[in-house]
Image (cartoon, rainbow, N blue to C red):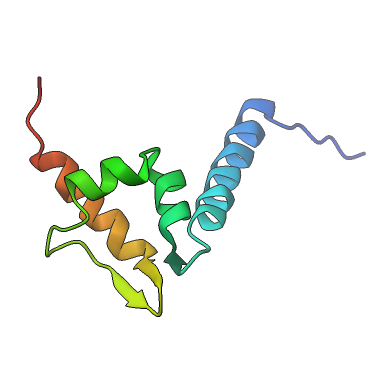
Length: 89
């Protein structure tokens, strides 16, 4: 006779960990963002982006024809650094 016991909490924790990994992979599937995606990813308007950090020489951006493209990973790194530099109220 075979007796199998399953720890439901442990299974749930493993499932949630794997789900977080997969969601993180999906979130980072874009290599480049355009302005619309940059606005979506940051929850910032195009005007706010242009007024605050777009012209910062450290901000990674490339003009291709009439379109601006932003390397996703580099943008994320810059945005975290930029946010940490902002004064706290």
